[in-house]
Structures are given as structure tokens and as C-alpha cells.
Length: 97
Image (cartoon, rainbow, N blue to C red; front, top):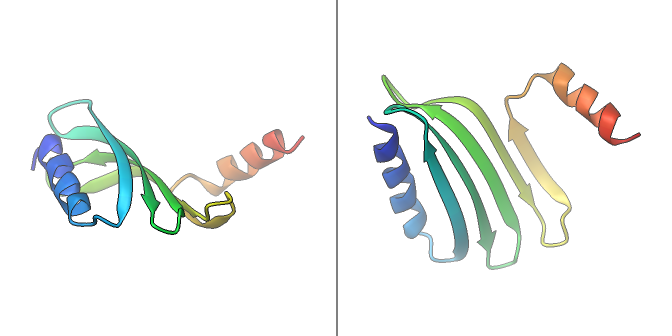
């Protein structure tokens, strides 16, 4: 599967969900590697921010990803990513000082 085909499939899946507004961008780095960034705003005004750095050459492989779902007031409901724990702890120390 080409990266642009993955993005088209993602757009098609999102189009089936009319209950949210969406802003999704795709940046093709190579024929098989791309970055998808998006924001989905749901009817209750909760928001899902996401980023995927994908390689689609042999299968869909998310090399890096981040999904953060939050309430309308900005309070995080959940966050998933594959950043190393040490990096996140260090970042937390830097940003909280």
C-alpha cells in the first residue's frame, strides 16, 4: 500500500463520521512513508488530536504516534504515544520549572 492510499483510506473512514468536524493533513515523505496530523472535534466539543508517522511498504507500521483526547475545557481524558518514558519524564521536568 502506498502512503497516499493509506491517507485516502483514513479520509474515507473519517467521512463516514458526520458527527465531528475535522482537520487532517498528510505529508508524504516518500512513496511509502508519510505523516498524518489531525484534529477531530466532536458534538460535545471534546477534541482528539493525533499524529502518525507511518511506513506502509509491507504493512501499516506506525513508527511514531500520538493520540490525545481531551474535554472541551482542555482537560486530558487520555493520551497514547510511543515516546520513550525517559524522554517524557525529562520533558515534564523541563516544562514544569
